[in-house]
Length: 640
Ligand SMILES: Nc1ncnc2c1ncn2[C@@H]1O[C@H](COP(=O)(O)OP(=O)(O)OP(=O)(O)O)[C@@H](O)[C@H]1O
Image 1 (cartoon, rainbow, N blue to C red):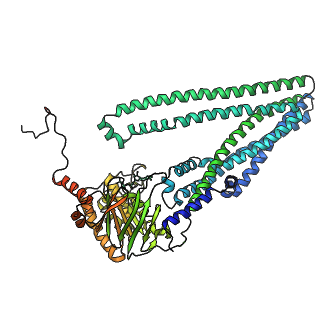
Image 2: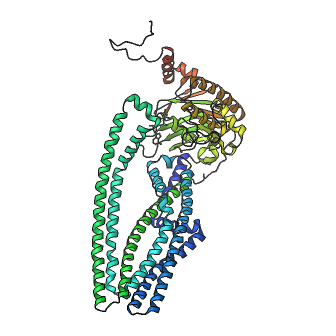
């Protein structure tokens, strides 16, 4: 029995659920393995060398303080030989510590770059690995992806943090051992170092809360600034006369943000100062105690100097450990999210149970059988119980009001989403059984919200069929099919011209010119089985549009005769729609009429009414403009 799309979707859901219901501890362990192992995976030798250097450097830097004690105590006892030995010890150990520290830091940053490359590639793959659009259009998943994208440097920096943590453990351990040899009760001072560290974290949290609160306002501020300073919006703003108002709003909002930021900065500074005050009292008390003990002969002067030096270092180790823990926490949460998203996508990509090859020709066509579809979180479906046949070799036009579900239907037909109910078949094979990438190789599409790639003209067009991008004839052929030769002719370096304003020397195009290159991109594939044109000519002039449709009609007929190719056209222009073999009227997600232009006109239903309305608009000169107010002079020719 053929598996329906609903069953396939249920299977995918089950896999997703099983991925989601994995014990969270497992994700924790996997996240730790990812973070701990990323340095070794990205650059094993570099990671090993850096680890060794940082361990040696940390041990040398703590041991160096013993040299202080030897030098000072020998000097106090007038033992020149031992003083020189101590000085050499200090010099040698600190030199080793500095060299290891400098080289280790350089290597550490090289290591972070290598890991960052690895993680960036992994995050990039995450976004592109998804078969459909759900990851990019589902609000929850999108925010998960945003978090991973924003925190990918934290994930990449985990090996650096791991090495910093290792350094802290070695230095901290050494400091504690040496302080015990001086006078164990002063160990209370390093413990007091936790107070400024905690106060510092509280201060950062306060800053972050304020930043989070102000995030929307800052976005609005940036948007207001962009609106008032870019060429794209300049025309509309000037015509509406709102430039002054926007500038005023920008100034007021900027002032409000500044006031809150300053207040938060003062509160944070207060916490930090209080934390340091506690530590300073403990630190000063410990020094006083050590000096008192030295004065009474319980502690040597060398031990006092060594202890003071160690106590100062102890505090920086505590606050360093707190920073490292914070950064590791962020990295851990992001790594976990990354793994969860990857698992979600892997579950979605479960290969179809009954794997079917994508056809290379159509004999019957594409059928929608009881197809319903709703976006995640929406209470009502966008498409309801759609039964439709797109016959092999036909040009099918879809019409309907805004929001009727036309683009959603296109998304289902191109495999971006699967129906929530019902199924789509291609010559009898369930589309859910065909590997999405294989089906997409048989389709080509031009959308109303086309992308303006800031690439060369060759890349912008050639991206429609990547393997044939270097083939000059293929690219020029697509440009010709999109009637974009004149766009190309005006470019300074032809196909090698840089497009857009992002890069120096780029040529900016008009909206219609961009759209024609986007069309050429969609027409790069020479033998698709399904060509989707979703409002592809909205920005084109009438002459170009009419020439294009004539040319596409020929191409569609050739494709129809050769391999039964289907052309699907979504348009609001009835002059175009009427030329289709089959017209489908969508209303509120349901198919309300299907037929040829003549039949639908004869039926006198919604299509006929909409067609007549649009035709009347052209014949009668369209809707009337409001009458001139009495007394005002209409513009009229100057009669001298
Ligand atoms: N990614 C999405 N997530 C949630 N709802 C969506 C999404 N895309 C579209 N919708 C909703 O689905 C409905 C149908 O949208 P669709 O884009 O399919 O309509 P359309 O007929 O192509 O409209 P138009 O003629 O304006 O392009 C709309 O109500 C829209 O708000």
